Image (cartoon, rainbow, N blue to C red; front, side, top):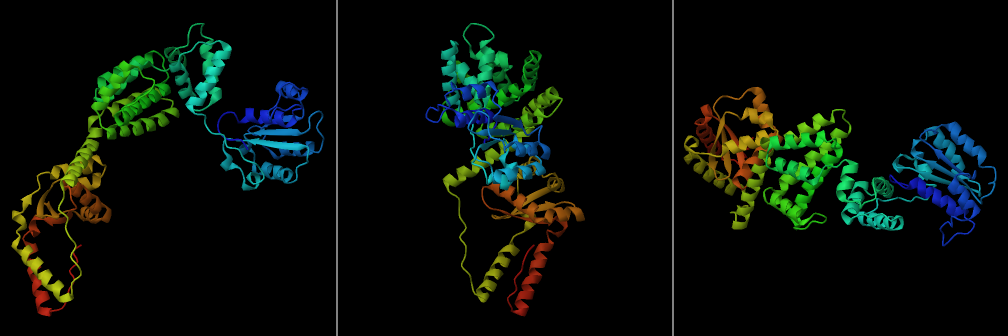
Length: 483
């Protein structure tokens, strides 16, 4: 069972030669004997290759079932290589299963697929599975150096690294790129030559684009992108290079180390890294990666690309992140400098609870909510709701103010009576939790919220007095639960 994008069919053919080789060398085919040469030439009828993508019916598998009873003509084993085996129909799998359960001794099946999860368990259980992994960039470069040495190809290390990156772990793709570059001329293959051949913009364009995005320079970004598109560069590669460059800025900001880049390029990256936060870089990588996936399936690539670049330059799009960053920093500073921790009182007897409740009521009576301190940074809380997408909650709190009832509670004052729908929105558990979380971040400690209307600010005191009288008259423990 072969897996992954590249090399599975080639490996199957090598395995077919190794099984039938007349003079194997430590398990490897000699490629010199009669059988090996016939397989390499594709003239040996004992090795059958079938593409399941176009031959996936029951009849195709039945033909194989009829043929397996015949002995091989020259080789020791008759080999069936079924490529893209996951494309077989259900009926074809059932027909194949019968043969796999009791295969003749002279027959071997090699199944190749990129999606083994689509194979029935009954098939997988009767196969020996080999998963192919992507090659590392270092291994690809080592192999390319050997090929270049044997073929007398002059190439720089930077160019080799770029080919290895572009191939994304596939050796065959890297060899294809190298072959195309070697056919362009007799001179040394440089990184710029590969960029020109593949359609990747020069690093200067990439730097200008990223610099414009980080500095919110929309005109610079549009001008640079139009210039690159006029030169006929591939949009997918262009966007891929932008994401990679932003990633390299993040790597430098984290580790102060980068490879491949020249000294003057490192200086440019260093300067950009000093002007931007890690959080913004991460947000850009995620958003541009989503744009890359969208562009792949669109027929309007240029329009989507330029709109995405303009959106990345939108300062309002990133204000919410910057405000959160500032609040997190303030919270971290308060943690470092020490925050007063409220201790939890142990459980009290009923009588003690009643006395404590009385004390709390006396203190609360003395408070006049109308004279409470106004919350000056309430606009920050509302703006955070807006930037985080909580538009319904934000709309219902738009004309409110806030007051500090005590050091742990914020009263949200409604100057007009909320509508029935507004009350439903405000009282939703998730909305209350979200609002308390934002208020707590703004204050740097855990806070609670309480909804108050202007006409019942003075009524709070009366309601509390009535409740105290009821508790004293009945002389029984009453738990007052405030919703």
